[in-house]
Length: 282
Image (cartoon, rainbow, N blue to C red; front, side, top):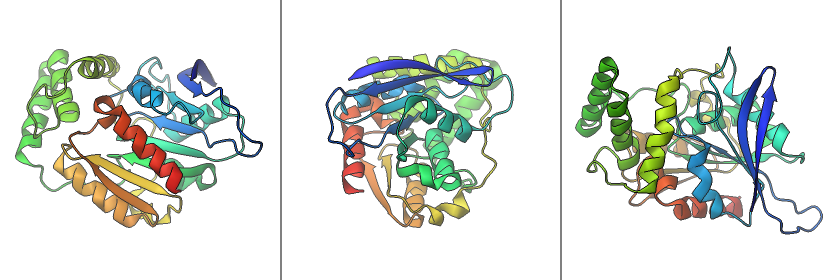
């Protein structure tokens, strides 16, 4: 595949994006839907690289760094994530067809909000342990997750960025019920590198909010949806994924074995298979 780096201009701001395209020819009228990959709140667009390599016969594939992540600077003013998303789509595609959105965690929140606010532009969704705006908070966390949340709070109070990054990796990459450093090597190095930028920029969790509550509107999503979670993810997220899939009319639900919240860092071929199956079954 050919990768093209693009700076998407939005007023006086620029988002960093990458577009991958195959050089194969297609029959007239058979151009594939573009696929937009939306990263998690502890990642940036680099997290999708190995998954993209497994999808080299699809495309175009597009990923971008949301404001304050990766190569995109902190926003100088208010914005909406879904407006940025459509600006990226307009700048990187030349087809009128709707796009597939693949959203992980907070990227899933953006995908769901986009499907509700502009359904005509969305062909389908693949949601990986998605957040959903307006979702109820769990009444109680399991002991393993709560212990790591307590460590995060203590590290934040102490201003210990290195400890924050390590605990984030244990919570989201290893999984709260797994041993620390379950995932090692390049995947862990990348997770720590991405998180270093995020912690330094300190983007608020509600930055770029669409201003809607998607949770009570999930039944309105009419496109094909695949909801997946890793079996080693937070128990509360596993439960929420089931609830999301049950409420969306055309949703399929899968639990991915042996992975946690960021399965594409651990097993990109597994996530690529999920994406292929979602498109094939739509």
